[in-house]
Image (cartoon, rainbow, N blue to C red; front, side, top):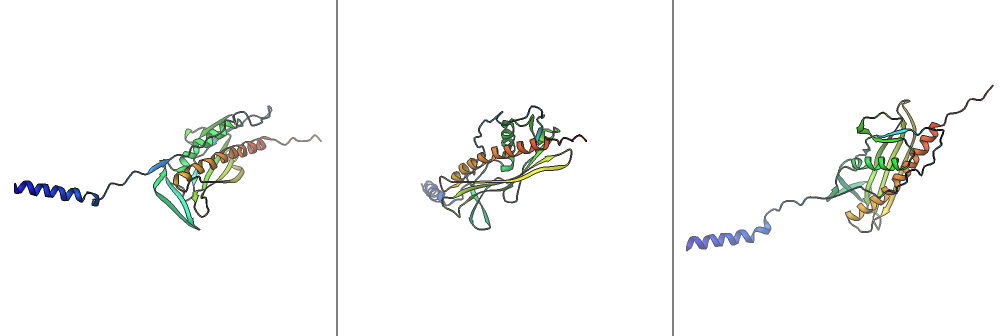
Length: 215
């Protein structure tokens, strides 16, 4: 009887202390950069006498602070923080590459568009750097801010044809990480067609050869 009572008492103590024992951390919630893009294939005007170039999208890079899966936000000037329980499913630069490829293909301005890891030689190359991708709580409502630096390169001539910085922002619908995710996708969805138009316009410009006048 004494042994039974002791075991019952021990079980009650363990049960009562269950809430005090350390709990395993919850897995972070993960989110995608997957904006909806309009299908604009064939919308870019192309001259019949000019051959459409092939294009390779190099592996995008990211500035420090935006080169990992952590979701960044600002509450104070110059202070970049990250959400503890929310992160991207992959580094944003990794998710950006196929999105760029799709936007550039849909522009209709290029004969082929390939990713860098396919090892295909192309006429032109597009380099991209993520300069900013964060939720800004210094304003209300908070805003997602996205900034990309893009350059179009002629690899054979080892020449930069054009470079431009693209930035956009979108107010968050809710003051939480998910609100920032939705806003980031909306902002990026506007930037990608603009980048495709930039690449197409400068590719056409580079293809124009000056004609020599007769003496």
